[in-house]
Image (cartoon, rainbow, N blue to C red; front, side):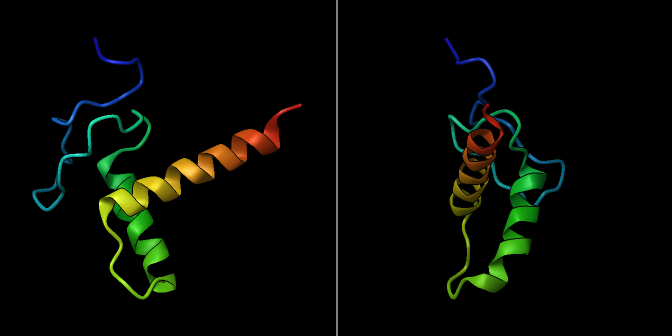
Length: 71
């Protein structure tokens, strides 16, 4: 049984250049969001960011925002 809100490894971007997202990636993280995250953050890294790096950045940002918005 798949966890609700988690994408299967079969989810793909509409563009041919996008790769499938890793299994267990939250449903709100789309291939387009991963690509945008890589473009935005790449100037701050010496090595090329992988899709997994972008997903980590997104998950960490989400966790930070969740923590900051708790009452």
